[in-house]
Structures are given as structure tokens and as C-alpha cells.
Image (cartoon, rainbow, N blue to C red; front, side, top):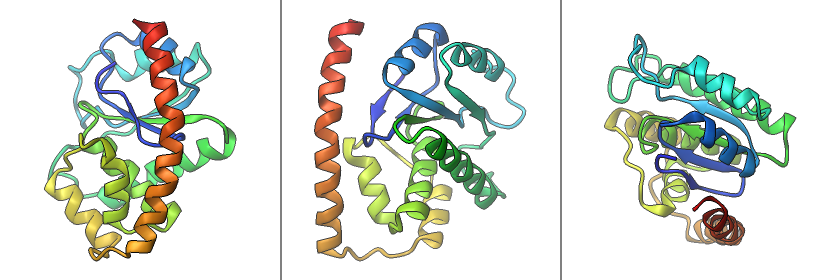
Length: 192
């Protein structure tokens, strides 16, 4: 799987699927209940597997799937609408499957998917942009486009850290991350 990583015990990020059948089985093993796919840019008909092929493979494992077209860069005149739709879908999946994991993916798993997860965390966890960014970027592997950063900073301002708040967020994240380390070690033993 291209760049799959756990962000918290509830959310993961990844890049585009190369071969959807084994990756669908892996996602089921990871208890993924929904995949929000931002890999397809509007009018992109060359990327394979297609959303229809991905949805068919995931459906076999009872994994919900939705592709939302999104440009990676400054061409998003409707970023607020795209983020709102993504937050709505993620919230619905969380309500339907409170013990499951949600995967947000794009082509490389670093910009569109990370920005969507940051938007969701800001809106639902009352985090400021910088707090959500640091949480999602724990692995140091995200790189948001300037358009995404600008939009999210304007929507969820607050560049100055509240040290106590950041320590509390970090503490919760570290506790949840330990469980994910065990999952990764187990997965590597099974999938290698």
C-alpha cells in the first residue's frame, strides 16, 4: 500500500492503491470501515484502478467508499464545499461504525488527504489549524499545498501555541499511538 500510516487509532492516511484486491483485504484486517478517496482530480480518467473498481473491491469487505474529486493545488475555488462534504462523510461513518478506522487517501497521501483530515479534526475536536497540523504530521510525511494551508489557517486560526493544550493533545496522541505500533508490528509479521 502506497504510504499507509496510522495517524490516530481512528484515522489513517495513504496514497493511491496500486492493486486494490490485496489492499482491500489489508484494510479489512486494519478494521477500516470507510475510505474517503481524494486521489481523482476532476476530469481525470487515466488513474487506475478507477473509483468503480476500488468500490467493488472494498464492498466485498463491507468497507464504505466515496471518491470526492479534488485538485491538488490552487485550482480549488470550492475548497470550503469540498472540506464540508468530506467532514460530513467522515462524521457519518464514525456514527455508523464507532469502533472502526477511517482511511483518507489521495494520490501520494501527503497533501489532499492530510488537509481533509486536518479540516475534520479542526471542526470536530475544536483544534486550531497548527494543532491539527502537528497531530497529523507526527510522522513528518505531509506537505500541504499553499492553497490548502492558506484556506485552513484562515478557517481555523491560531498560530500561537497554548503549551498546556498542546501537551494534553500530545499526551492523548502518544497513548493512542502505542496501540498502533503493536498493530504495525503484527501487520508486518502477517503481511511480509
